[in-house]
Length: 333
Ligand code: TRP
Image (cartoon, rainbow, N blue to C red; front, side, top):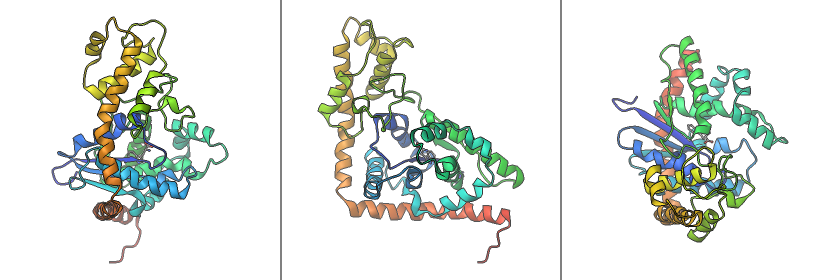
């Protein structure tokens, strides 16, 4: 809490191009907190280096992710938007929290298991302790609410365990946060294999729709989307492909699944897929235009990074020095 306002924190990695899954499952929902909460939205570049990055790409994507936050309607006057590596307290608190996190807990993280299978040649310690850095991100700001997609809920649960453990030994240190997921669009599935999450690292580029794909590309990808046997447009666990398209259409148009089923009753998959593609392209067009405008102004983005880091540091410093004091680190003023 800050005064009478609850705190929201979330982060997005500047690695790879962001998909409509990132947009619908996370970023789009950040805005609804701006009015009532004290909000921190971070570009988590330190998390990104747990897998090898090309420096020039990482740098470029850091600007892009900040621009995308703003293009998605996050006003830098109302939200603290910043870059993780510019606030050194994240890494410092992460070290301390490492000493309050168990090897066994980290070994159970499903994302670690997945990522170490995918990057078998680089199972580094950072990949393993990734959730501890994430816990530090969250706990530094005494966060109440963490909006995330389903794949991050396990990490937020671990963060709660770490906070509770620390608080038990050193009472009243951290607010114990809660994960919140968007009501719909939590999980957008691959267009080629609707049993799999849509992922920016998918080898099949037709399976993934990026926030910045142009209109023709978006429509083409949806046209190729895998549907199911049969021809009915209806939400059904047996029809994962069609259900996924209904979810996407619903998210972008605000229509309910029932309304969509009615709208397309008696019509074919072809019609429906075109409609989903057009709705997606229509909804993304203003975000894309604003993004391009913002990205062209590097000086503005840098000024924004500086301002955001200064704001965040103020809060981060307070929590870190509280923690250091509780642990018995000597503090000289
Ligand atoms: N791990 C998150 C992801 O990959 C990103 C992230 C880092 C994050 N720190 C966070 C999300 C803190 C929420 C809160 O999506």
